[in-house]
Image (tube, rainbow, N blue to C red; front, side, top):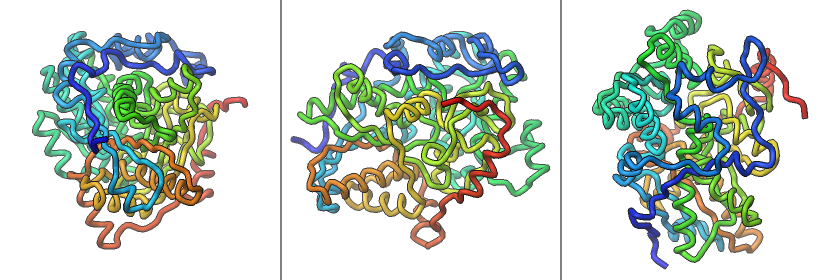
Amino acid sequence: MERKITLSEKEIPDKWYNITADMPNKPLPPLNPGTMEPIGPEALAPLFPMELIKQEVTTEKYVDIPDEVRNIYSMWRPTPVYRAYNLEKMLDTPAKIYYKYEGVSPTGSHKPNTAVPQAYYSKQEGVKKITTETGAGQWGSALSFACQHFDIECEVFMVKLSFLHKPYRKVMMNTWGATVHPSPSNETEIGRKILAENPDTTGSLGIAISEAIERAASDEHTKYALGSVLNHVKLHQTIIGQEAILQMEKAGDMPDIVIAPFGGGSNFAGLAFPFLRLNFDEGKSIRCIASEPSSCPKLTRGVFRYDFGDTAGMTPLLPMYTLGHDFVPAPIHAGGLRYHGAGVIVSQLLKDKLIEARAHDNLEVFDAGVKFAKAEGIIPAPEATHGIATAIAEAERCKREGKSETILINMCGHGNFDMKAYEDYFAGKITKHVLSQEEIDASIARLNTPLIPD
């Protein structure tokens, strides 16, 4: 078997997979925060193109990928799967480790998989401008790249911590024509309010989402795009796992364990959902593990209840695992994972014990990232190191138990623009951080949102 497992351009999937069609318990509906009644698709119309709203609520198992989107995908898709022989040797494990490498995209991560269709459907409806947030910059870069393809203006609110630590992500967005603001900013009412209360805040994805939504809601020609959490975003990302199934079949293997980093859910969903389909349709028992930071452990230590998707409470109430919508995570370098809540679909899957979750502290993940870089030559993005840390833990378990299991990781992006993070790690500036139970309890106590009965 070769180290690299590839597909031809003709083998790029022509449909996205909608896991809700197969879920034994469908996700609970979003609620209007004023009436506490379920909302309909019309409530999302001011923010999203209608075709994306249809995808958000569709019950169809597969959704066709437009030819124009698929043609742009072909710039970097299909992405390769690699067998991590050197990492296996370093760990002296009987496990087989593979990784699906999304870092070959123009922006260096998996995010263009949804940015391109979101820009495409916006263009079809005559949208002139799209606003968005970005944590570490991968999503903002991806949407900037997609918008310039369709001649749409792009405005990005970038979490202040990442804006300062990852200046070249901002330059990438500027190169593709986007305007980028550090969030919280003085460009919006919510930004000015938060800055007045805490001028030194490092920001959060929840705050940046509020700013982007406020901006979009004020202009009829502007729409909002989200890089994770929502159903249609996860839908678009399933192209990753569908390709990976074909590649693993070509390798004559199939994973026992599928692992991906977790922020809001698109990264994890992209790889794991198509493999969960094999569990639903073919009776397989593939373990799917979401890997999150111990500084922001909504899956492993949060509560399952209705909450807002943003800090200001501008979104509908969503049934999710959450730490509380005004929770501001510690300033870790994995900016894409600094989000208070989990997407609705992933939350329901975890509630039903159809998936697993694991948390790792920031020293553990950088240790894993450096090991991977030394073994496989690719420097992972800080977000990707979380999945690697889980994979190493599983490989070490296989060694202890004498089991030869197959592990597949979503290596969601390279860290070539994240070297400040590695510099801080080598200089000893990154310390182990685990959120205390007191901090979690205090944040959740501030929630005034509906409980979900068992």
